[in-house]
Image (cartoon, rainbow, N blue to C red):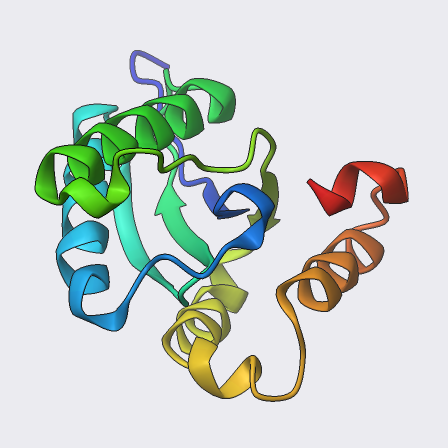
Length: 150
């Protein structure tokens, strides 16, 4: 085959450092749009980006030459710089050092989009930490509790 073709959906989740709720609703739309631009520059396709005051969900189609680690690094670095330049109140802003990345089948993509779109509702019932633990358990990922409290 003369072409290399892929369709790999990845659901990426990460929070602000120590889950501090710094991302006011008034800035999120612009932040998510900026993050979508970063995803595109990494040769990936953003499908949906959303979140709450303390964390972000990104569903994207991973480009065939892009690693998840590089994509997340670029998103976090670029968006941190953007936030700091946007408003002095973000001068000490940081994302948590880790992240979660979960595979998503084509048949489940619409469910993940709906999940991302309804983050405010989900978090009336469950904290970010509870949500993240459920993802880790659902995907059978071993983890150490002490690292989830960053």
